[in-house]
Length: 235
Image 1 (tube, helix red, strand yellow):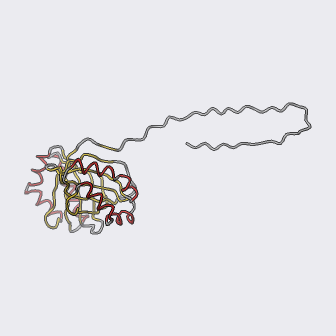
Image 2 (cartoon, one colour; image 1 turned 90 degrees about the horizontal axis):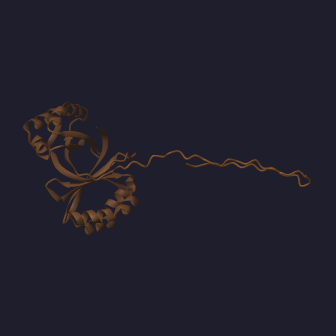
């Protein structure tokens, strides 16, 4: 809270014998109760299901997807975020929260799901992955552009420490971590979702030696795969 104080000065008569008096000003202020900032960081582990596929027509597909919600809920699967490819908007990413990993995997293999997808206009075979999310930042951001990066590491703990050490480096390059997790069955297979706050800086950083060194320090094996998408719907 910023207070703007205005002061007024009057010129006194040096010949006056009267005693000048200055009215006392009550400078006591009352500070309004301010609620502490909301903690947006979630460190409770959570299982998620990520589906990516191409669709013939997004408008038709989303109608079919939402109509199938009761079947997902019956298996303890909850819609969370829908994203569309940054370059190819017919590439769709669906992030879902799951109550039971075994039930979710059974749902993903159910032949009826394939029929529902085909009816909604899904092209080709979908990619379905199951993750254990260990860290999330749920703060609302103005930008909707996200980067999902997948890669393999030599050791999860060593990579996580190196990643935490690079927080300022990412911030300086217009990147903010949103979700950190790994394959539900193998913590050496990492998935990372970041928000792209500055496309020029972030895209240059993706190609930089600095990022290459950061990956080497974290024990990343091989070249990561990246999918850029825009968040278009939240549930």
